Image (cartoon, rainbow, N blue to C red; front, top):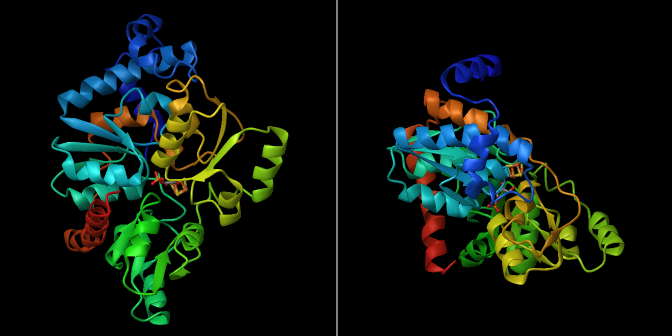
Length: 350
Ligand code: 13P
Ligand code: SF4
């Protein structure tokens, strides 16, 4: 468990972290990528951290892999690679640096370690969990297998190594429908996200999809009424939902896709007004690139993703902690399911 007070005292004794408007000005090129959503006073506070992190990263031969839900100062300021879960997993297989700093939640760091076990994988806060990863255990998967003998288990990457190891293949929100469609069996077990499974079932009606009843605490909160009321109140808004939302929400929306799928859709179509039915940082991270789009509507914050801050990233690089470990035997088993997903995605041209 991180002791924030000690961390602050130690960091401020070692690095010049006081708000610095002159440094902020020198780093105006970086700031230009987020100046629509980050005010200059906050940028003067962030700039010393961004400069210190980027310097330490080079000294320690580390790369930062960041999920699309990271805040703009992380996404645009210190990340070497940003993406959705599938893109981050693929990137993890390609990292040559000694150290991966995973800015995202624990299952993402664990996936990087599983795929590239010789690297030191660090997460800036071990408590960055995920409600989906907490919702199923290998015993639950065994229960489903006993209930539906012979049916393959397709497990969302938002799980721990134990569940991955107990599965036949993994999926992410960007390839779930294609992976399920590619299974030979008529019945397919999906774990642990009931809503992703129900949304996939709409897209793959030829399969009998049975599922575990987990949910994402961020996306399960949206209702179809929210979407319809918002549309009525602000006509002309393109509404784009993540597939972890309940199916009636996805149905009431104009498009659904993974976090990178959402970014691509908005970038390609440039709607005048867009509501992203997902985590709040998504709209902030693309606001500057898309000045013609007005991002409107409510969003929900993921309390786990928001545990990752510039201060904790700097501390991780300084201490080389907290390191993510996966039992090698378990990691090998989990790797089979993750690599099957990556290989099949490539084969299918995803
Ligand atoms: P993506 O794979 O779409 O980035 O989703 C990850 C996630 O946790 C969304 O809640
Ligand atoms: Fe997990 Fe939901 Fe947070 Fe994604 S948004 S990390 S699925 S709790």
